[in-house]
Each structure stands twice: as C-alpha cells, then as structure tokens.
Image (tube, rainbow, N blue to C red; front, side, top):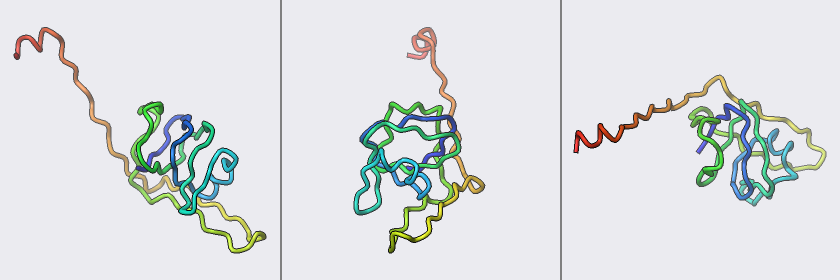
Length: 119
C-alpha cells in the first residue's frame, strides 16, 4: 500500500517499506534491507509531510490515519543496485504532481435513541 504523508509520522520498528534512493540514504542506519530491496525498520523513524512510502504488508495502527492518505500515483522507485562503489548517486524525486488520492468517507454515528427507534 502506498501512502502520502500529510503530517509527520513515526514508523515503528518491524514495518517493511519500499523506499527511493534518497529516503534510503537518509535512513539506512535505521533499516535492514533484504535481497529484494525491501527495508525493515529496526528503530522507529520519522517521515515528513510530502513523502511517499510503500508499505509492504499491513500499516500499523500506531500511525494515525489523519496523518496520511492512500496514494495512487506513480509507484515508489526501488533503489538501483550499484555496480561500482564510486558510481555517482542520483536521488529519485518524490512525485507529487500526479497524485490521485482516495477521499475519506465521513462517518455518521447514531444516538442510542435513534437505535432504539429503528430496532
């Protein structure tokens, strides 16, 4: 699931993410990266508003839903495997221009009186 961070979030340890090169470089010390390029958070880390993350698996309930939206734009770019240590680093821009968000649906709560009248 891809999310667009709207307010700063704290991602707890154990969450698996697909990140772009820029995000990986800034947070590599808090990640364990497997052979497929999936990064597992080893210590809680923050992401700022405007960043796009791809969560592998379930999104933890510890992250408030008001702080992100579901993102349906361009896929998060997986890091290219470097062929040489001295290869110049290029960062992938975070693509926000083509974002397509799923609007949240309002929730209507019924009062006890309304429940009793309809039951």
